[in-house]
Every structure is written in structure tokens, then in C-alpha cells.
Image (cartoon, rainbow, N blue to C red):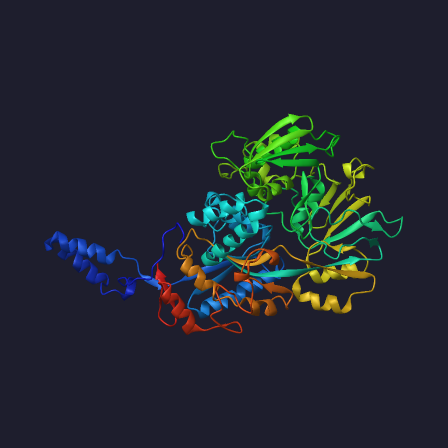
Length: 594
């Protein structure tokens, strides 16, 4: 059960025009109260001040088709299902950055539909632990608070490798019972790549920093890798901490190095800035590579590393009344209890978690202190009151971006392109380093709004690869008629589509309500209707290898099976489910207390 108040469908007195007290009758009753007893007055007040039971009205917040065609289609289909089940439903569409600001920062929504960034099972801690209920970012945007669930998350977070599978299974089973959000499906990702210009494309190309390193041009004259990117936000903002602008793209990972990098479509990490590390009794000793520099020529030191973790924990650096943690990477740095600089090339991290949960902390971007420390100051906007705790670090566009990554910033034209060039002094270019390195002089990212036009650009040899996955409705055509010199790269996604509840509000705070709503979603039908079959329905928000047998998809959701057939909600079944959950349903409308 959630720690927020339960919502009941109990009977109540009528209200408004339905009441026996009209305006004149109300005046007469008030005049007569001078001769009434005090007990009658109390009864009168009790009668007229009771809230009524009305049809549930809710809004589904999502993005328009030019941002994510699948999200708006899901929202429209869910609206039909919810209306059939007796709710009054509207859809509120917002541009992608405004949608993320509304949901992840302002928490101003009823329910929403979106593509979640996902990740290894450890992301569930920051996504659902009650300690993050008031923070910004993907840290518990749902406002979900449950002390028993917190304990389960903490057990998983402290588990060692041997116990991790069992701990994750326990978390997922508790998740399925509570339904703090509803995972709908995991899309299959498809991209196009020119095989006549570059060798080394990975069939499992995934959006990581390794994706565009190690490629080999087929001709010595090829100096530029040309990406086509279907999201203009990349050309508007290069802040690696900006949750409104960072989404499913690799570019900032090419600009900023981290101590370690995630392995594509696998568990585990590999050393990057960290030459080596050792783990013992909750402490990790990290050896930093020598002679690493930022793009502006300044040396990258252990002090920059220590600063980064302090800064991501609180971008005010302790100078404000309200801490301002970075909305991205918050869960990763929260695993770090402390950092001690041992010498010029070695640090010791102390953790209060198990090693599997500690390792992701090494994958945050390392920031140059001389650039970001001045951004710890409060943000200002002329004529506008800025929320306390908002720092320049959280709102800066960060152009030009200065990191230490394999590519350096050159220029940007908003809504047109971003250009990077190979960083000549990057450590991966040394003969004694056996890591993927940048093999081309220049990387140019052209902005193109739709998958259809992005496909045309690649097929016409005006781009080498689609940086973001293609929308599902174009995949059939791509698989049937791709030119011989263009390859189709297919990879499973860590991302998943979901319905998010705002548990700060009733009735979304009630797990019984959330479970019935989950039963109104025909996930298998949506996979075919919205994703043309290029996705898999799921009852758990993790990769398939982590899903316990108890939650394996067996033709229907094993925890909240669909209350209907072939996408059509059975009204009587939905009404009975809501009644059993403690809510009123008159056979046509779902009614809740206002």
C-alpha cells in the first residue's frame, strides 16, 4: 500500500443543482437557523459542506506526433479505453522540452505517456524511492512513496553480484503489485547506415559513446561522418545536465569523457578515463589516466573528478538554502558516500551500496571545474521570479561545450546542424591505449524532423547514418526496399513506453486504482496497432533477461490482464473491477469524490 492517503468510493450527500436546497430554500433555512438548536446548525453545516461524487476527469499529457508519433498514438488509444471505462479524458500535448519540464521538473500532470530512458535494474532505485519524491528529473517523477517498497529497493541496491538476480526479481514482483507506472512495450530499434562509405558498423548499434568510434572510412578522402538527427533540441542546447534537452542521443557523450563507459546492450562497464579500479569492502580505488586534457588545453585532474561528483550532488556547492542536485545522473552519484583524493592520479570512492550498484557511478560526465564552478550561482531571468535552488548550471545552453571527449565542439546553427571535430590529443589515439578511437576528422549532425525525410537523406547519400531510431511505421518500407549500399542496423532498446501516474494526487495515489487502470491497457494489441509489431509487450520495465518467470509475458499481462478483447474494453468487467477496488461505477461513469 502507498504511504499517501487511500481513495475511497464511499457514498456522500449530493451537491450543486441536485440538492434539495435551492437558492431560496437556502436563504429560508439560514433565516430559520436563528431559532434552531446548535445541534441542528452543526447538522446543517455537515450536510452542505460535503464534497460530491462526480465522474473522474483526467488529462493525459504527451508530445505531438512531430516529436514522438508513437506517444501521441498511445495517448489517443488510451483515452478511448479510459472513456469506455467511464472516465472523462482529455489530451494535453506539449513540445518535447516543455513536456519534460512539466513532468520531470514541475510535476504538473495527472497521467502522461512517454518513452522512458530505462537502463539496468538499478535505475529503479532513483525512479521510485521516496527520498526523490520532490526532486527533478527521472528521479521519481511519479511522486510514489511507499516505505515497504523503499526497503525492497535498498536491499537490491546493497546486493552483491551473487544475490543481485534474486533481489531484482523481488523488486519487480513488488513493482507489478503496486503499478507505480505501467510499462507498455519495448520497441525494437532500427537505423540506416551507409555501408559504401564506412566499415565497422555494429548490427547492435546502440546510443552510447562507443557507437561512432572505430569506424573505418572506405576511402582515404572521406573525412566527415554525416549523421542525420530527428530532434532539433540537440542544436538548441548542449548542456549534459539539462533534462529537458538530453534524450536518446550520443553527442554529449562524445564531448565529455567519463571514468567508465557502459557496454552496448550488455551489463557491466569498461574503463575509460579510469585506467583501472579495485573494489574492497565498499571502497573503490580508481586510477586516472595520465596526461589527459580538456578541449581548451587545461589538464584534467583528480580535482576535476572530485569536483564533478560534488557538483552533481548539489550544483550550488552548498552555498544555497536549498540544494540543487543535477536532474540527470542524480541516482548514480547518490551511491557515492565520499571521495578522497589519494595523489595526483588516484582517488578512493566510498559506497554504501553493493558493487553492481556502485559501478554506474563511474559513468557520469567529468566536468572541467574551471568552466562549471562559476555556474554554481543562482540563475537569473529579467522580470521573472526564478525558483529557489535553480542554478546557472541547470539552465545554461553550454555553447560552446568544453569537455575532454574524443570530439570537440566547432559550431552550431539552431535547427540546422551541429559540427564537431576530432580531438587530436584524446588519450584513445595513443599507441599504448587499446580502446575504440575517433577515426574521422569531422562529425556533422544535420537536423531533420521526420524519419521519412531522414531515410531519404541517407538513401540519397547525403548522410551516413540515422542517429536516432526510426519510427515504427516506416520500418516495413525500410526492410523491403533499402538500397544495396545502405545497411539496416537492428538493436533491442533499453527504452520503453509507459503510462506514468502522478501519485501526489488522488485517485492516482491508490494502488488499487492504478492496477485497474493497468488492466484497461491491451499491450499486445497496441504493439500491433501502434508499433506495427516492432516492439514487445512487457509487464516489467527492464530488459528481458532480468524479468523473472512470474512476470514473463505469456500472451497477456501476468499481473494485470486486459479487461476486454482485441483492444476493446469490456465495460461491465471494468465497472466490476473498479467497484471491487472501492470506487463507484454506475455502469456508465466512474465516480470519485471531488
